[in-house]
Image 1 (cartoon, rainbow, N blue to C red):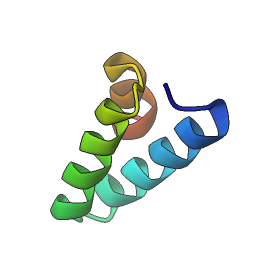
Image 2 (cartoon, one colour; image 1 turned 120 degrees about the horizontal axis):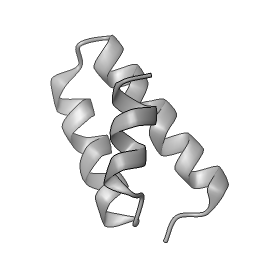
Image 3 (cartoon, helix red, strand yellow; image 1 turned 90 degrees about the horizontal axis):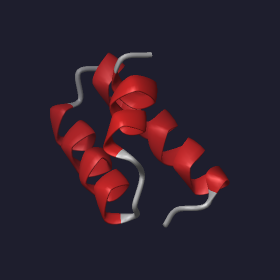
Image 4 (cartoon, rainbow, N blue to C red; image 1 turned 135 degrees about the horizontal axis):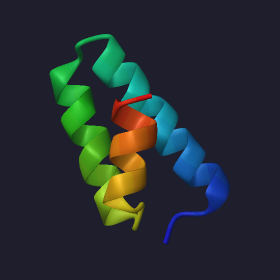
Length: 50
């Protein structure tokens, strides 16, 4: 399970990748989020939809 600090870092990087249309980075950070135990709903709502 990712620490709160690590979760924030992952979500920030995921958000940046999506808003900059960096498909490969978005996939990379989504996979990291899942691998490190970030809740998929949180990743979607805070990383992608924010």
